[in-house]
Length: 225
Image (cartoon, rainbow, N blue to C red):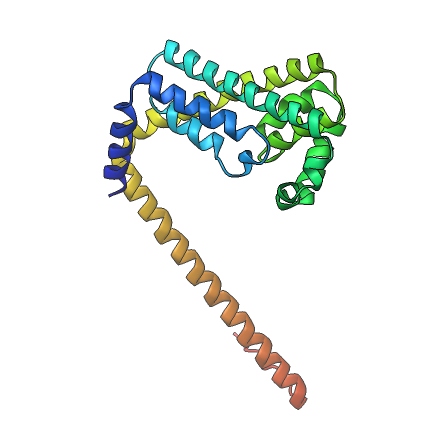
């Protein structure tokens, strides 16, 4: 059943013209890296799914380039929003909906002050949408922000397209093994749960018996072998 589903998924996505697929990916990633939208749109999932169609070095470079460019555009939009509206975004109702802990996390990334921290924020869920806003709010120099944002976007695109294409190649060649593998893992998990429950039950019974003996003043009987 799982192998049939995978086959249908690959057939569906392979049937899309490249320009349509790349256009959808680009639009989704621009939205995903914009403030607030990134909390809803799973950019990594979109890119990994699109990467399953990669079959040549040219397609790899093209998709990674689209991902990097779209990411830079979206993060640039977040930077401009922060520069224009400043702390008001954070204090707004949508900003409060994001959660103060997420803003604090993004601040911690930005407080690192290094280009590596800015570039690496692209790999962090939620933070990659908030760091550009905070950078704009703090009036970080545009050139510095653009340089390291571009570096992070390119690395992110290369890594995720590589992961998606590699996983696709493995699944396409071994889709018939996915079902038995999942079944085996599920059975092993159930057995592990049953064993853990049995051990815990035995320990609880032993503890209850020891407590009862202590209450009556009796000593536990030790068997001599």
